[in-house]
Image (cartoon, rainbow, N blue to C red; front, side, top):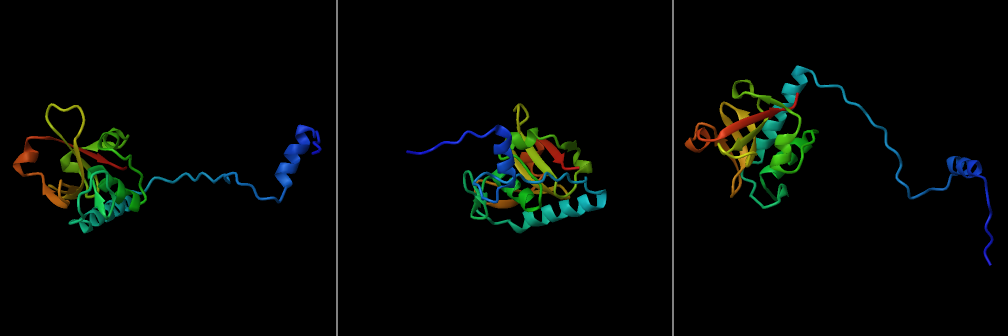
Length: 165
């Protein structure tokens, strides 16, 4: 027969706080608040994002893909930003809805997110990473490719550019 002991709650708490016994409970982590990047540091990080995106040209398309074995559009942007230490949502709609600063094409910097939306659509249907000079890198139905905003297809679409600040 097992015996049970009744201990006051304070004794249990005291025991729990000084006990050297390991538990399977998760260890609390420190929450670190990051300072906003300086303008120069942000430009450098964005240039690195554009460079990484460009280095992935030729990677195959894969529905639902989020790795270098194959990407879909939002998986590609999420991967590149994550490798650069920035967080993006998983889907195109959620990435577009993130509270990032919307900028004009004139003020866009390499590394900014570029969304393509059909004129009458409510949400974007395509996303890529702006690389400068009216170009961006995105995943097509075949692979990661460089795209040009001067191509007739894009001139007939709404373009939305969002920027980490």
